[in-house]
Image 1: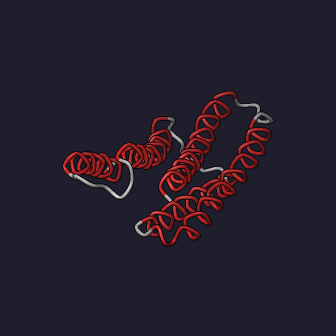
Image 2: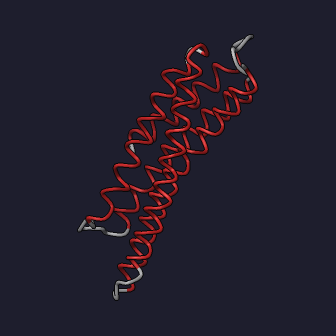
Length: 160
């Protein structure tokens, strides 16, 4: 929750700074959309973790290991994209990271389909309900990284 709160605070600070700056290197609307989409990524991951608590998940299914790796990989690609985003001269690196994020999302879709197919073979309906919510949380987290990458791609197109 601390990361989520910190992220919300940074979005607020960024928005305030955006109002004060006379000239920005990128359209204000684009910067605002990107920062809010970055906040959405963090919010989705936070919601996923909250659901583990709410749903009283006490045993982790081994099959979520791949989903966990995909989220970490996607978050790292987002981080690297933003490190390069400081300098538009590194546009090739940014594009590479956007493609990487999109590829991870494709893997996430495949993983989601596989895990959901296997999940519905379980006979305990409560387990199916709980893990459906968890798997959807993983899917939403990875999808939000892709939406962010797509928005950065659009912003690059408009500003390069």
